[in-house]
Image 1: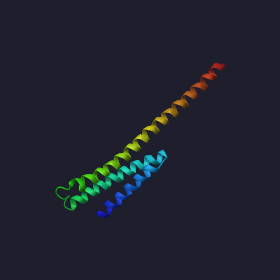
Image 2: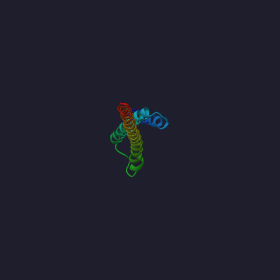
Image 3: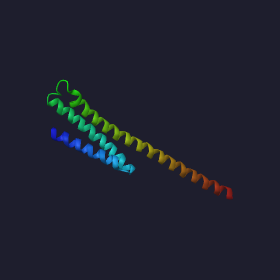
Image 4: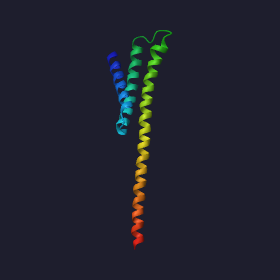
Length: 116
């Protein structure tokens, strides 16, 4: 269980670094979703590992459980917010392109009708 937790944590960290360094929107959207999924899976493995080892020491829950879980959640929310923002922008761009295409189509059809 320790190996899986460490591996998922490293994968989530690498995906997060890639997410921050990419410029392409579609790749960033995919990386955001994958980062969130990997961070949540790593957090679940971490919590299961903590429970299997007898929970955090008394009085040290903040450093041994809550702080690492908060870090996983921050990475997951960052990935989801990035993916959601890019998805929203992509949706707006598609709607703008569609409206422009329809307006051009209307302009050419009205120009054809005015010639007759």
